[in-house]
Image (tube, rainbow, N blue to C red; front, side, top):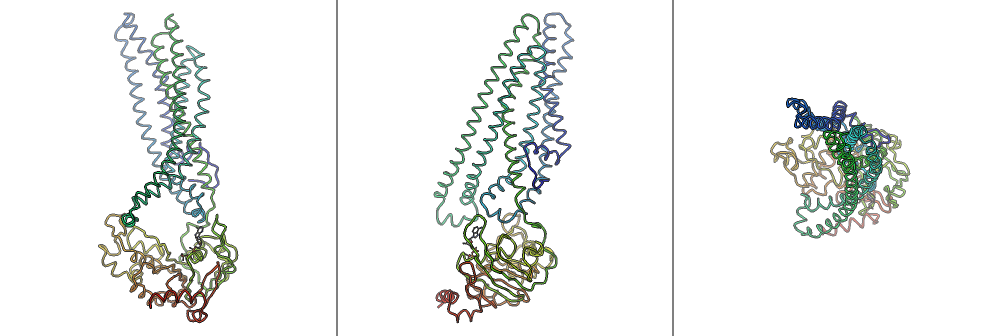
Length: 593
Ligand SMILES: Nc1ncnc2c1ncn2[C@@H]1O[C@H](COP(=O)(O)OP(=O)(O)OP(=O)(O)O)[C@@H](O)[C@H]1O
């Protein structure tokens, strides 16, 4: 539904709603127009007729029975206006639902395909959160504002037509005073959205601190460290700053609306006063006087308050549309949404040739001339200090950051030349901060390779999850976590095994394991290492670990420092070389002696 590289303007809110729900939108607009004519022009006419007939009856000029028709017309006008109001609400809520059905998947699709660097960058992340936070309401606010403005314009036109037939100059005065109000309202709306944008930064931070204060994840540390007051103070400071910003604009807006409403009330009084003359001289009937005056007052109220509000909303949706335009124009990863190929390509080798990389928005080179080669079927381990760049290498390998210099070659061919689906099929990763999906255990494991459903039990068994599965109420079908009904939570180590099972379920020939045993108990960890050869038979593995005992399993250890490989070899070779690796290994071994 959202088009890439389209320049969205505020009016496009209407077009989007019309595309999502044409019947309801057209019904809404037609009913709204009818309602505004009924509420103003038609009501003024039937009121005039009713009052004039009643006064003629009181004077004895007309028979009593003549009152019935004007009375019925008056009641019908009021009744129909109310019914139309209810129908408009119905049509509008249907439009909202239809828009939601079409818009949300479209926003999610763009979101999911965005280049990974936008997610990591603060500025673009703020834009992404602004757009994706509540797209349906943001757009519907504009749609309703347009329809509201149309209603006001129709009301204004029908009242003005009535006034022109009696006191033409009053109509001109109302028009002249309304024009600057329109303009000011548009400006005010823009200011409010821009202030909202500033306030959004505060909102995101207060939301995060709110999570820290109330979220389930931090409950243990929160209780133990007793930091609630400290964080609460920070939360309040941020909240206050955001609130003051918003308040300043809202107060200005309020004064503006109130001031202009007062002005318009004065104009209506003027119109009413000038109409008294023709009534007294008999040029205008009392009924027409009442009809016109009540229509003018009703319309002035709308003009003063609703019109300012609607124009404000229209310019706000205009600003939202600018954000939407920028969001839809953000670079996307080609084929980001494609599934991995059903059959991975045959893997032969992987090579980094003089690769340099810095994260977007950062000056520091994390990889600085990184070169190494890996052959199929062998096991490799990356070791190095915290922040040396081990995880970064795995991110580059899996295509998350294509903006590197140098070459990354798979089977001798540049990584960027492969389709995303081929790269996805080639690697499976157990991430350091692996995901926990609050869905059944079986689905958690199946996500590792959606082409290969039905092998979840085997993968669970290989990952040492038999006991865990048996302890769950419904075995593999038990929802994990506490979100779904009947869900059971797991320990960190059990969750990590689920992530390992996910990887084992995949047929990817290259397994990347980034600290895969950090949450496992010593027995489980050594069992995993014992079975490592069997589990990874025929696979190429890239192991990232600080536990140097585990790196002994690797055919080759690559030590990273200063953004490049500083040592490489088997455990024995590196120990004999007595360099960096040997230093790290001895430091760790010291603790076990
Ligand atoms: N999104 C990012 N933006 C900017 N810099 C980043 C980003 N992610 C990581 N870095 C920086 O890149 C460097 C390498 O990080 P990386 O996670 O690859 O290190 P690592 O060797 O895996 O560390 P550890 O052993 O602690 O897991 C670090 O200095 C880190 O600060």
